[in-house]
Image (tube, rainbow, N blue to C red):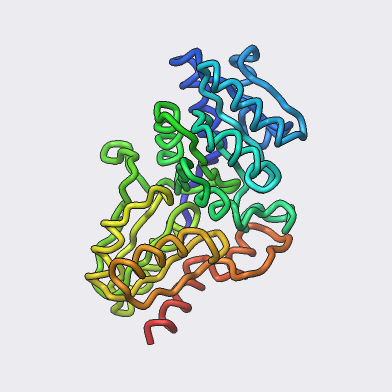
Amino acid sequence: MIRECKSVRSVYGQTLVELGKQNKNIVVLDADLSCSTQTQLFAKEFPERFFNAGIAEQDLMTTAAGLACTGKIPFVSTFAMFATGRAWEQIRNTICYSNFNVKIAATHGGITVGEDGASHQALEDIALMRNIPNMTVIVPADALQTKQAVEYAAQYNGPVYIRIARTSLPDIFDEKDYKFSFKANIIKEGCDVSLITNGETLVETIDCAKMLSDIGINAEVIDVPVVKPIDKETIITSAKKTNKVITIENHSIIGGLGTAVCEILSENYPVRIYRIGINDIFGQSGKANELMDFYGLNANKLTQKIMGLLK
């Protein structure tokens, strides 16, 4: 299905500028990737409040922690692979252990990083962040949800990790009736199977649900933008209604959204669950849409997979 798409990275950069005008305590840090992360927009508007740490991600995080100690609200950006992988110890021991008010907005997560290949495709970032105490983990699915998530993070007191897609995404939510919160969003009600997703795979799951409807399968679609703290109630309620749950994510099936859902339901309402995502493998180079197809994450491949599972 063809849709007009928006750069969520540009939305992130623009939102930082808006927030910077409202609050002089907001500062932005980057690791020599400000063109890619779009923090360059903030740097142009507020050069005295922008800090380029260079390719030194550990220093980037500890500097942000120091700024938070002085009452600043640091937004830290780099690629998800380097933010969560290279600087994990600093995030755990320096930021989260002290519950410092640092916001990590990492771009280029998931298989859709594309041609940069396995070394840059963070398939483990959600798992790495959600297992650290005090960390809030958010995975927005479109431009509006990204904007509101960043705005929420700015006023929320504590560490936040926001995964921002490299790809441009179509609008899903309407500004008139959407307000970001920690609650999951029921995009479509259904009774045959619960499809639980977030981020870039939400639009694919919505299209998949339409294809399933054409063959008589009424799928419930749930968007979970906040992976931690996760909305247990909505997930349990949906599982009780359908008794079949499938999670879909642009992330390893180990440790991410699928694992979080398994943890909830195994303890509260055990049902059959199937996780669709990147299996226990590394990614590879290729165009984003080709990789989504190869790893079975576009609407057509999801529909085929789910039909097979439900049989």
